[in-house]
Image 1: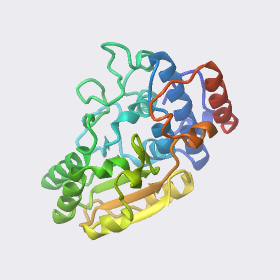
Image 2: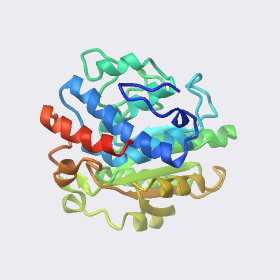
Image 3: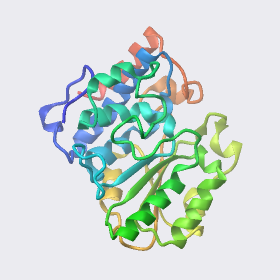
Length: 292
């Protein structure tokens, strides 16, 4: 692995799968890289990336079965970004793992650049499916898991959803189909940060109890602290065999804007925005203090 941007990890953090300490560092690195890319683009999603940083770090630096040298390897685990507006947090990871040159990051959000706010599978190696309007990717995950079943594979498909995304009816159609077809190779992770672009998620349309609703659709459900790296590792390391019959949902309780105090205090303000020089210095200072 290489490392993008201006921050170099300690040498012992360059191996994969990463240690718990290295995964914590990677989550902060994702936050720093997100700030760096958005600075060049002039506008971007901060707080939604920050709530998912630990989840992305553990998935890509420990859990997912991948081969960056062969992005279309049939036996790889697939990862679908339901909450596609956090693509800016995924790009430094894929560059770091070698899917595309790190120089691409410098053009994030520019006209005709491959890296945009939402992943586009035809433009970026390592992206298993495009995202745009939220709510589609759990259905796509069901299709991928069915295809794996037909070919006798033992790979998994992971779908990262936002809790606001659960307002979409298509999500629940997919949840029903996944249990009907006995897709134990499907893992949904809900980034339950409690906030959507329109306000507190359950004020817009109540989705609680999230775990209980998935269980009612025939899923195995686990709740956890989505910022506790040790717990995320424990849960993902303990997934049932992919050839079992019950899909798994992990409800990760997170905080939108996690890691930057003024974003945590005003998550909607920073759903889409831009850090001026003073705010950027404050944010990077807070994050950097945890990377020592």
